[in-house]
Image 1 (cartoon, helix red, strand yellow):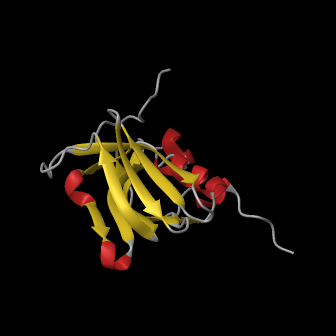
Image 2 (cartoon, rainbow, N blue to C red):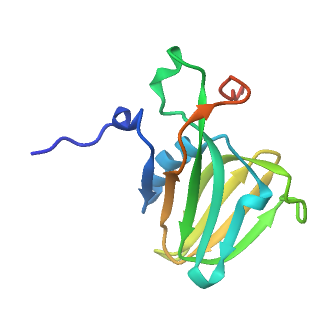
Length: 156
């Protein structure tokens, strides 16, 4: 009999996670929190029914920050089964605008369909109408020291 995977098991390895339900998506969202990306790194591929982002993700799972500075890693966040995309508060036409991802959430409409909402800093949001929930987060580069040398903080 094998043991379940633990959060710590992926601490020093590249992430490759999928979410097929809202509970899985909460975990994926926490690992993608504070990812930053230029607006030019968003793609909706209607023919493939896919929306993708290339983000610079904070390595929240990294327990080694007592040995080194906080790190980021480039990751691809993909949402599958996308039927439509809408946005609010996302600047259009400025590919150099830097956006910050705060959360990824799912709200079911007519099971298994629903909306995946990417909440951005500054009151921006991207809502993806999906036939079924399927979200993936995959690291595609080696980690690098976060340019700020710090982890983001959210004082409430």
